[in-house]
Length: 284
Ligand code: HXC
Ligand code: NAP
Image (cartoon, rainbow, N blue to C red):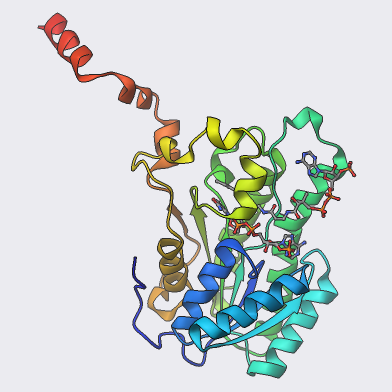
């Protein structure tokens, strides 16, 4: 699994990734560093960020600034922007990747449990977007937003309802600002990943025995989960100038999963060939 963009594609570019210390944020950050970017990673846990920053600098030879920031606190986001400019001079792109999620029947949730997920996913994204957007507009600087959503941002999904509400809001934000802020040369796009194994997602969405009961790969027509580099390639492209004419788009990278599960007759994949032979005979 190889990187896709030309070497040096992100030289002199600075990218901020929220939730960049773990999982998919870390993988996308690593690839941007390999392409020459300066990277800022943020999340609530400074110890995790510092460890990741050291490891990534060692692995790639790039520069990583870890900054503790809870995306639900606007002042902390403003601090991230200040520290980024102090260290790297300017900000070129923001990758809104931080999220919170867990599975539960909705009637079992407290209103606080609903809040916690929506606040991280939706409020966290619009706070970060508002702060970075104001900064770029005030300086007449171009910028790029890339927001990580999910395919249930548009289908909805039971058992992850706060996340579905939050991600749907992030998708609306992406499309709305793609139009409104285009005049400032600020682009907004989103990626909707299918299943990509991470400790954070798997521990919360497939806890305990569920991981044995439901193999996510079996829900995907391609019969496999995603590889992090596949997502990193798409993210790097959408953050780069190569995608300069893509604005307001959400790109799904799920091996066909959501279409398969929405297809009225997708379950017919369970019909064996012998049965199709019988059906054909009956028809004739
Ligand atoms: C029901 C729960 C719960 C659960 C927490 N709560 N976990 N309710 N089921 N599993 C409730 C608590 O009881 C509490 O409500 C409220 O939520 C706040 O819980 P805390 O534990 O105090 O919150 P906090 O420590 O801030 O942790 C936030 C978190 C946690 C969201 C609950 O999971 C987290 O830190 N997540 C960050 C990373 C993450 O979620 N990564 C996965 C993203 S995967 P009460 O009423 O008791 O006070 C993803 C993939 C999508 O998005 C698509 C996949 C295909
Ligand atoms: P992850 O490793 O748990 O990533 C989530 C990150 O968000 C963590 O680094 C976490 O760090 C950070 N975060 C949570 N609350 C925060 C807050 N209040 N302020 C700042 N940062 C916060 O899980 P992941 O699988 O890589 O998920 C990354 C993104 O991909 C998410 O947007 C998720 O919805 C999306 N996604 C994942 C999958 C998948 O299959 N993995 C599929 C579709 C979409 P701290 O705990 O240190 O704050």
